[in-house]
Length: 50
Figure (cartoon, rainbow, N blue to C red):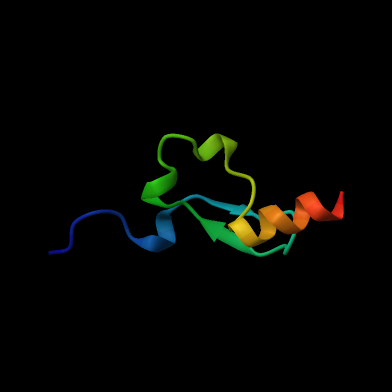
């Protein structure tokens, strides 16, 4: 029997740069509320666009 939660049951957000949904990662467990971008690439693209 597998441990953990099914990936379909994880919370999701939409990246404001690429408009793609991205799911919760264990890496983001402590600061999920402050995660805005799906990747560093999108984060850099947003900063250079402003």
